Length: 157
Image (cartoon, rainbow, N blue to C red; front, side):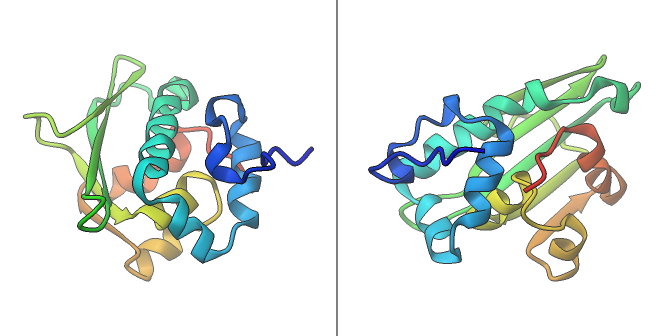
């Protein structure tokens, strides 16, 4: 795979033109400090929008079967970058992702920091280890949370 990082750095990257596998490889080669920087300010918003925007396409309806659930994602931040909330609604073999919390009670809620979220969704962290070390907090249906890796095509870094 060719290096897709632009000469100006990752902040100049056109995220829409990068495949999930390329993005996973980019995240893998970043230091923790670089990942933290990536998940701040306007760049954080761009990254989150792109990741959640792809979630519908990476959904595996065959793995979902008749599942009907709302998964709430809470990506914690700082005073400058407050917690970002997104929801994935799964029903009728489809996944719809929206920004913000709806009035629907989620079946499970995952809360984690921006850098940990980035590592999780790029396949650069073990969901089990993240749960065991409390890097991801799960509210509601833990079984559903543990099945998320089967419901989406998560790249392997």
